[in-house]
Length: 171
Image (cartoon, rainbow, N blue to C red; front, side, top):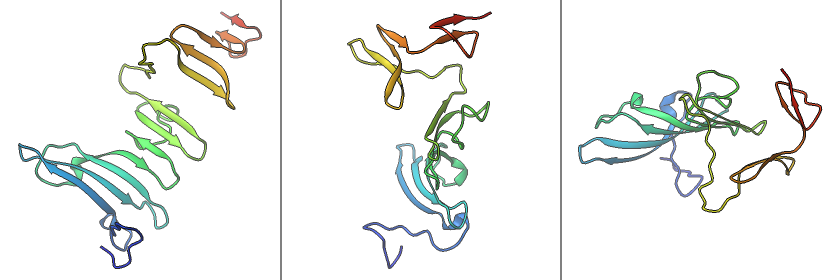
């Protein structure tokens, strides 16, 4: 509560620099077995001038309330980064054991990583044939992978990182 709201709905967590002052908006319902199903939107403050918006889901079936019953499933941090299912923006290039999605706002890099035996899957769920994935450089299509046609513009190397012809096989 606050006497000076900054919008139509203003939830104030209080004044201070500990998790006690994190502002939380909770959504709950009780199941037929008396378990409280819950999700929280939490404004956390890792420092006195930065804040993160964290989406937490209750992952333990219980009628009780405990912070350990929740998992952070998505974070929008103070730098504008997006973290889904992990705690880093670089789950694919910076770690060998992280999974999830990371968007680094400062560079525009997007990384997706899995820790199961499955790789990234991209699909086209439409009855007509066409492009499944298109790669671009500065809005110009450089590669296209489709259900009927696929192409790469430029040289392609197998066993080499610097192909000098349309197709160069080394080794």
